[in-house]
Amino acid sequence: MQTPEAAQQRRSRHRRATFSKSVELHDKVIAYYLNIKHYQ
Image (cartoon, rainbow, N blue to C red; front, top):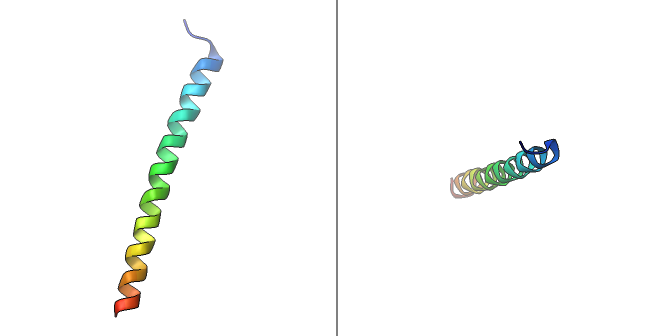
């Protein structure tokens, strides 16, 4: 049986990884959008 602290740490690490992936995607979407606007 693991401690609640260990479980908490694992969860927050996972959340951070997911968060950084969505930020990356967000940046790509914005860059894509700006390119479209710029070249119209």
